[in-house]
Length: 146
Image (cartoon, rainbow, N blue to C red; front, side, top):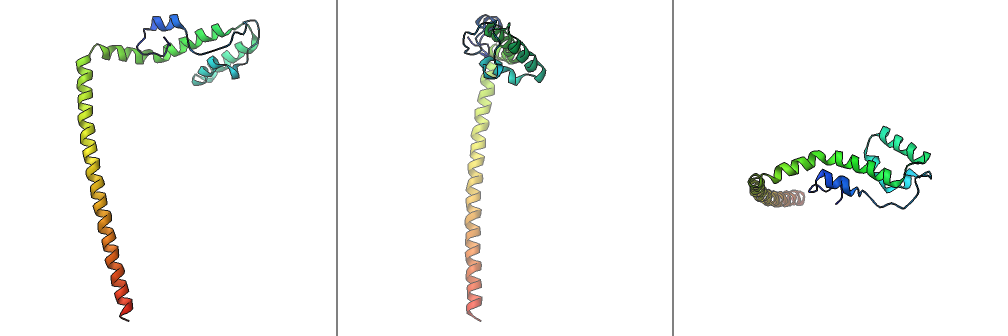
C-alpha cells in the first residue's frame, strides 16, 4: 500500500515505502534532482529541506532507495493527522451515518431553495422584459404622436 493510503496503518505504510517510480541509478553516482519523481514530492516541503536534499543528490552517495525512504517518512508524517481522524471516525459509524444523513437532508433543502431562486429569477427577468416592452411601446407612441 502507498504511504498516503489513509486506510493503511502507519507501520504498513513504512514497510511498503512505495512513493513513486524511479530508475535503478547507483548511490555512487550524482543524481539530478530536477528530473526525479521522488524529489518532486519535496517541492511540497520547505525550501530548506528541499535544498538540503538537492545537495545530497548532487553530491552522490544517495540512491533512490534513500530518497524514497525519506519521502515516505515525509508523506507519512504529513498524513498522520488525517489517518488518525479517519481511524477515530471508523470507530463511530453511527455518528458518521448521522452526519451523512443530515448532509443529504441539507443538500436536498439547498437544492429546493436554489430551484426556487432560479424560478423567481426567471419571473423577475420576464417581468423586466415585459416592462421594457411596455416602455418601448410608450416611447414609440409618444414619438409617433408628435
